[in-house]
Image (cartoon, rainbow, N blue to C red; front, side, top):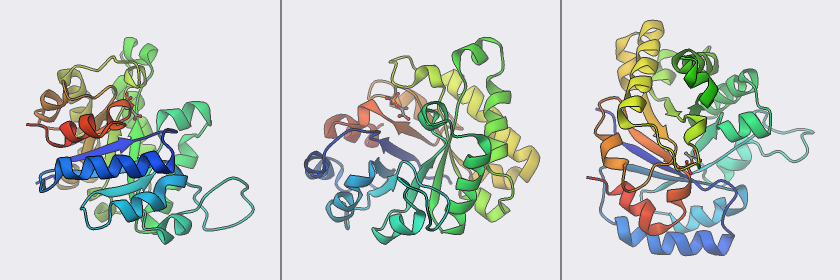
Length: 250
Ligand code: PEP
């Protein structure tokens, strides 16, 4: 049984004070819920705030980036041991904004996935296609290519704990959502690609999220799809009310 997982991606928003105020408003709204694994991925400067505000709440927190080397001459970067020192358990890897704006390629993304597992952290691997690729019928080949390259070298046991976020680039922050049926079709094909390489048992354990303009109005339909196990959420995760409505979806 795959536990639903809904993750906030705050991108480069919020001050430390705003992160703290968010948690104080958000936690009472979801108190007692156990159906969904809820996680907040925030900028580095807010992570120690989340560590103390979320303590004992059951809500996890994660980073949006790291460099896959323990320490060294990498000006401006942050390592996994540094994140673990403040209790970070989740790391987003391969978000399209990092692939596009910061030119992260498949090779770096593969190194990051390896490093996250080696450090005992939970990677959230993002894959997604451009609109042009979708229009050319390349969605599944692009996304499965990104996914299979990123997980190269993982053991079956590591694969079983993987979280993959399918995020069509044209749907991120645009208000355009893939229909639930479209998202299910792509995610079903990605699960099948894992089954072909690693076997059905592994594929049935991997949790897939959809991301791209998820909001309280469309979460239920997305979560009703058999292969969709959760959501990675940008805009609608910034307000306690809307993020709590996503967590409490029916
Ligand atoms: C994201 O940041 O991963 C995302 C899906 O953003 P939004 O929900 O705003 O489209």
